[in-house]
Length: 413
Image 1 (tube, rainbow, N blue to C red):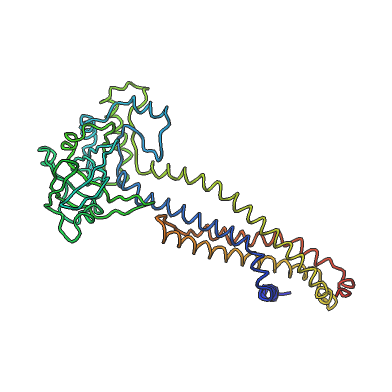
Image 2 (cartoon, rainbow, N blue to C red):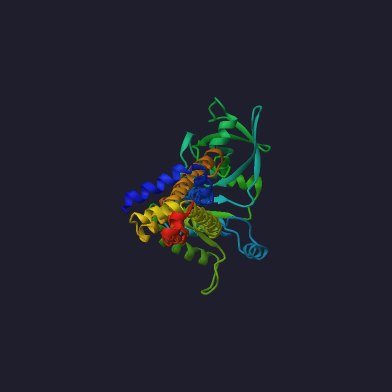
């Protein structure tokens, strides 16, 4: 039989038994849909972390000198003890790094853990639990902040310990709806500050806003909140290719500033955005290791159902097989026909699973903070799985049909 004839007969059987075909494919549809949807969400998260979160935390073409390494989640007790034994990053350390990297585009200091939360009040309006950071002016350049109103903190603000504040977009939007924020007097805790700038929106991920913050001069911050347990030096280079060399120079400067002898371990950390992305990928790798097992179970169950339905079809069509053999069909033709039906059935399930998974992923992205990104390889794997199941679980019913004795088959009612 020609390929077109095989496919025509296969699709004809599916159309003739729509309900049975659907329930036959349910296991494959669910498994493939799960694969496509979960991979879409994970890939979307990976892309979002790389494109948004990593840049928002560290900055593009940048790295940080930190007391504690970047880590998503909590430190265990032993790791925390090692971090606690490290000296704090100081203004003197920042000066040493600045001398070592004169070609840097920007070198900034920013306060770290524990980050204070403050209510910000303007007239009768209040926004609660806003993260307050003390920064030097270059920090705004390192983070690639764009200003939708006003301007950034300046060196004069640092030198004079001025009570001025730059607000994140979300804070300004809630406080000053319909009113210009610039020049307004707000209260952080018990202190009054003048708003001099509003940063353009950065967005959210997993419900975590990157627009809910307040920046005040580093010197003013330490007057109000004292010195933090962690302070971070952020270094921005003009080109990504310069980052690696700059990190080596910063490491050398920090080791000299901390009086470390050759062979001694660094008592500080150098981190780039890539470190955060890599750590996130390690977390998602755990999910990727679970997905194949879950999908495999569903695929095997779906394959067994297909095989049983095909065996039932062989029994129901015994007389048809006998007639075909009687008029000259070869065993090979019968085997190909039933194998083609199994493959078409399983591949159809794979395609329906892809469409269902795609739709579910888009639904998740629309109604939740989880981003989703469909990848070509997951679609290809899903469809290939469907076809493979058809081959593996369709061989036995096809061979059983091909081996029927035509005389016995013709006698069947």
